Length: 498
Image (cartoon, rainbow, N blue to C red; front, side, top):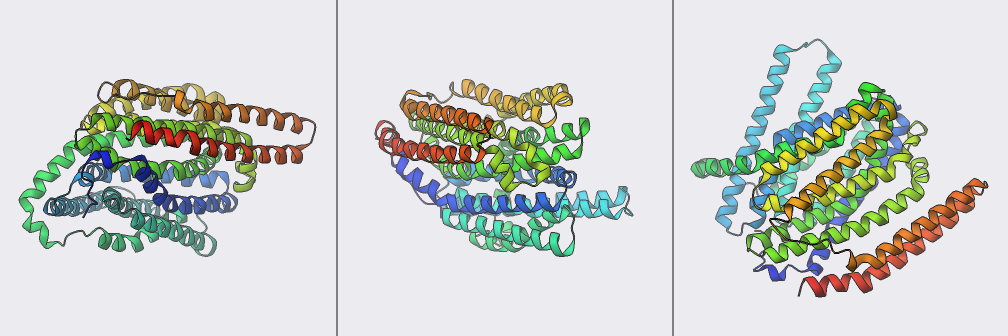
């Protein structure tokens, strides 16, 4: 049973923060394990081998989205607001039937491959088998996890995420170091993790038995049609978002070489893992609240949710980008192999772009709420076209460093366009005045610290520059947190959620 909230007035900022904090372990521990994995695998594999892994992972991510994102988006949209037990059972029975459809789709694709392609090429067959298994199990695992999110089972979801991170890390490491030293082994570790966790998730989400498929057979097709209408445009949107994330790697590979893809991917993965610790708990926690406010026709409160989350992202974005800009070289030396450390220069740009993309998850919420997902698809296609044009023109001259800038520009375009159009549906304001003091404080601190570090390094006082910058940054973060607690948090509570 989904936790019941009678009216949107009870959806307050304190409850949101509590939910966000509950999600943190489920993102923090996997992120730390990802950092450790990056540290190890960028030393075990060459930049070319790691680039191959990045390309395979992008294919897996793309095809997993094709097979299951329509279902995951529909679960988030409809299950998160449902309170009637019988209707919840109907939804979950339809989800079960959807799993069968996904399995049949992947099975037919596998049969087609082995009928019409070279079956004697063992390495290609191994790559195909691993990718097919990853897509099937990843689709089931992700969809079951979305059910826990929709039902606001925060602790259960966090535990599963932690277990997944641990299993992936241990299994991948054992296979790479002792069984098969090949980049494909990293994906095999994920497959093993999914195999263990799917039965656990199945039980936790109370998926009905196969017998219920016959009991609800008429209702299943009605709900499935509803899922397709809402979810299919979202598949296109997710494909575009994946292309925004990964298409530049193929363009870099085409114009330059796989080693640059490896350098770019290692830095990108490192930063995206850190960003997910901050952004994923907010996204998971906030969506059910906003959906309930919208379902209860509370446009004002829905808009205020968007306002508050945008303010939080601006503050966190400036804080994180400033810290990464100051310490990108040290981060690269600590976590990346020697071949990959040139990627330190793109880390602040990648981080700024990812923060903008996460803000876009809220700027386009008005279109999700009103089922105008086709508009989202059109804007995302336009964004991908802009990104690809810029990459094809500029990457030959600047490689992966230019690719980081073009991706940032593309994210910025999507955010600004959806913000401008979305305000016609749900009114919200970008109130920088409320957060101006801590914002100005952070910008000034990072400018001063960056200048000090640069000049000390110029006179060969590198260690002293690092010590001074570290102490100054820690002090700035502490003062920022005090300002946030004393000034910003009370303002958010009192002004927006009375």
